[in-house]
Image (cartoon, rainbow, N blue to C red):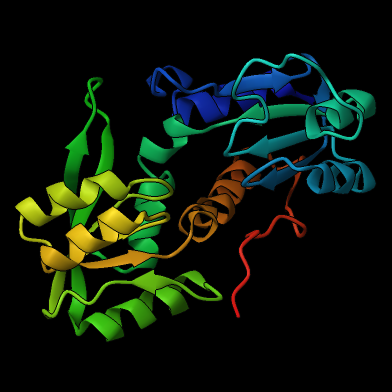
Length: 255
């Protein structure tokens, strides 16, 4: 019999929960440690649709990247994801910034998908954990070629990018909301920076610094971790069925 506790401890061994950033809320957020588990759904987020999917699948546990409870709840409304998990008796483990920064976590999975080599830390936090990386590309790209490569590598429906007007061999990256790290990337000579969000002023600054800034979308820069995590869990707990959500998707649409 495998319990939530054993799966939690394994995740903690590869992405320690105490390494998470101070603002974060990872961990076991719904349910208890002693629940028996034979089917697990993995998803970037836990939405109402994902909660229904887990119930239909017969899953006892959902493992997500983004915490289902981030800010304190002042009420529990019918039909919301936390309400549905409690109603269905489904447990939730959420591994957020601890998984972002772990070896084999979100950022290193993103770098692998982009085929970057000689990966090094771009920014470290107060705990000595790497928040952003830089690496060298397999070949030289023009700005448009690199943006197209990122789109194809991540399976994006579309993306935004600035034209740095320089060929690209050195790339900085931070999955999700890592826009502010573009300045550090520029300081060490990166010609491109990949992340999941952008603001107008950041795009202007990137263009002025000669950086090809690629905003590939929060979902696409982080969903890259789900399949590798599923494989690790499946190898560790061979009597448990691990399934990647089919209903979790990027909410952004492109025309």
